[in-house]
Length: 175
Ligand SMILES: O=P(O)(O)OC[C@H]1O[C@H](OP(=O)(O)OP(=O)(O)O)[C@H](O)[C@@H]1O
Ligand SMILES: Nc1nc2[nH]cnc2c(=O)[nH]1
Ligand SMILES: [Mg+2]
Image (cartoon, rainbow, N blue to C red; front, top):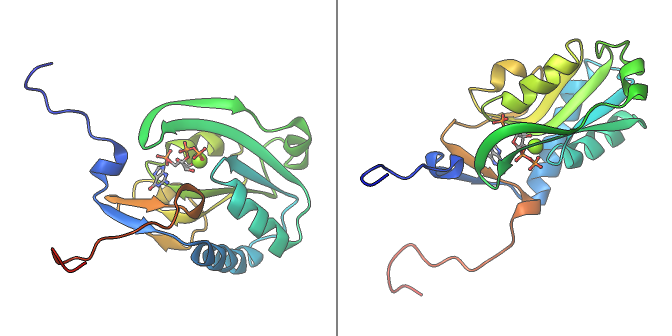
């Protein structure tokens, strides 16, 4: 409508950028595993795709877990969150391993932001342990273990979504 401010994307609302390199991400996943090692053992890892696939692979390798399942959820179109869509649920085999409630299962995602995605999966597996690498304040209460908290107005850029590119100097004309 004329005169109405355009809707801001999550990334625009989140003014600060937090770029994460592969090295940093790997280090943060290993740090997460150190904490999780105190909590386990786990029968299986449940990765929330797609972002949870990379940390799930690293965490499962460190913890020696060979059974990995996925729950496939989409809600963000780049940086705009819409309705959550469960594209694939948790498999019957993983459900059975968790006794129907998720006991002894480890849910892994890259981050919690509003917490909507995490809440949906927690409701499917109430007794599972939920771990993320990064957490923003709104989603943080849903997470059992995480490594780094960033402010709600920060947008995290993951290495699989980014590439090295030229960055102009801060001072005009210094190039
Ligand atoms: O706490 P929330 O506000 O729900 O946001 C967190 C979710 O958003 C991102 O996934 P996305 O829906 O972008 O899909 P992707 O993992 O396939 O990138 C991220 O990987 C989390 O799963
Ligand atoms: N890449 C990325 N995806 C998100 N989905 C929800 N919040 C974020 C974020 O900060 N970064
Ligand atoms: Mg995701």
